[in-house]
Image 1: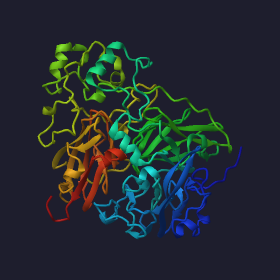
Image 2: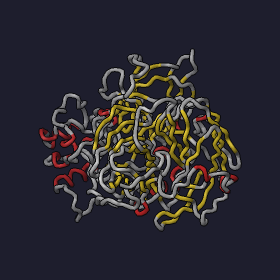
Image 3: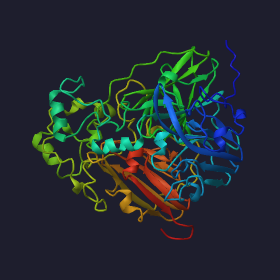
Length: 603
């Protein structure tokens, strides 16, 4: 047996440099990037009561592909920032770019002026300026991350992990722990990607349907999708055709290695720091126990796979066996994967599974969950598209397997169905060219494992599996309910809340009274999954968890054509960003401001 006496806080990934070697390197004195002329891959670790971070730019190379990059302290990802619950910290951020920049501390409870969103909570950091995030004692522990909220800098590499150690004993015990930060690299400039998406939303989708493809669709089903003018392979906007998926900044051919001794438990802090990608996580041959979501502990849930949306974090415990196992992060559309290895012997590798067949969208993703397709003739379907709410329809037959079974639609014509019936929307949703689809029956889909995972033959995590480890402090029944619609026009690549882009509503925020308890229902009228993030606060998923144990999160995936609901206690004063965390959706308009009024005032 190999004795691997490595501290659990070390060896964050191949290429990692120990904190002791970080004494005032050249880049920390001002953006002088000198690492063979390229930005470094992998990340260092920084900690203490005062931390210096320098934003600069340079060139990146990943598996032979070169591109422009924005680094913090000279690397992509930027350094792991390690803080301690109960202790204050000053984060001194110097911007050496020739444009404004910023850092948002994702998931961290901070005074709103330090949340780091230009135009919402502060002006931004001008070129050459140093901004001090003077944070009071940290009020939480767990796995988080940080990233730019300026322009599209996040796509270029401006992000990194953030870990907060608890003040007392950690409720999650493991022999070792590692951070696995997922992201993407592309040689294209983010503005080039946006330009191509505006010209054709399917530009990066190489999984188009053709006359000769081998997708498991009958001729009848192909006709049906054509009648809807929808593409069943339209899963994500930017794919492996341009992205190289990264684990701790390394491509799949350069995968990082995490060491373990046989019999040990390993905690993986998994962060989806990508700009546009959902990943399906699995470790073939091992079971993962999900023990924390978005930084906060949950009751352990044993699974073989889970989907992690952009900006989500999950902690899992795993007891690897054998010489090595592979950590697979397959993109949701299965156009590529990021990889890492758990190895008991340095250099050992396990088999890498092949990419699975691309998934197909279903009727549930079209907002037609629960519709009894089998009992509908052509005329019935045409009528159903125009009028009655679907609440009385047959929901009993809509298990995951049925949702995933495109064949269940055989014999059904979509000709005449109105996929854009705006009369189904409430009056406060603005109808216009920004809406090209309306979900006909948007049911709660928090029990859905995610696109493509409804028919796998092993256990997959759903939001309904999550239960808070500790009881919630606020058990009041919400005094107010509100409904927010996620809207968009795919062809024009326009995204919005309630039919209005942020540019149209920036002076009209969503208002909450201080300490108000509100139930918020998010309804997705589009055919894409959206990871919706609220800054500055945690919310509780209304997922059927036992009373007082609803799990806290700060990101919730709203499945296509479905809904998700959370309860919120508005106890953090200030203005907070509220947006889709898919970078190009946010910049296209799916963004709003939430205002929590000062204590003692109304909403």
